[in-house]
Length: 214
Image (cartoon, rainbow, N blue to C red; front, side, top):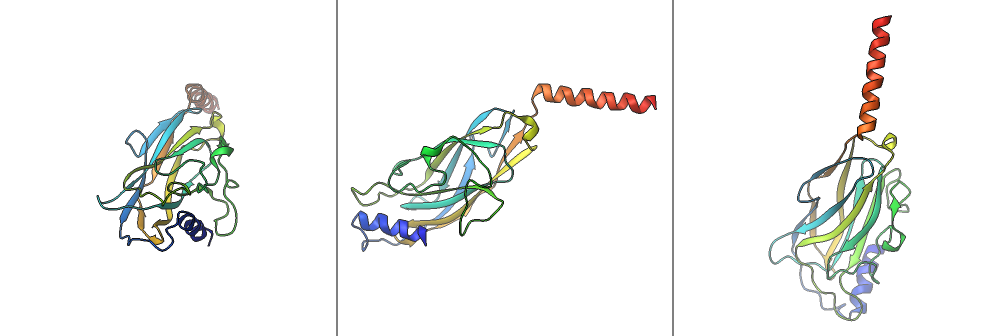
């Protein structure tokens, strides 16, 4: 219900509640870093994740709601930036966590409440293009949102990989829903720090010597 209330408020505030054009777009929502669907990071490294919405040349929309789901903990959201005509931290940016609350280490408590899964590490991005001064301008295709993320510096707390999935919820052009499907998942590969790898090698060698001695 909150999703449609947000879109209705945006349209009414812009004075376009009765002027909605049909929308038949079929978008794909995907995540890449430097053009790749995977990144290898050592503890403490940071990276930029670009979330893109790609469709046909005539596809447009004016509002977006989707979740980003992480398979394991270990990442801090340093910040995010919507692409124009969306406004980061604007009157219609209803994302959780909000831009003003960052940086934030992501846990299962980051996004909670009715309608959200429990014991899931996820965040929700929700926004309407423009502001209240004019009808919502259309967004076509391209980079929708950019995330700045950092891997935990404590390697003992990290898994070998973190999978990031995008789950489209509600996209619309005015009040007309727009079809959006998720692309392939994004993979963060955790590369052990040199010191950690060396300690693991020493421990393995010590165990091997004890077995031979016995």
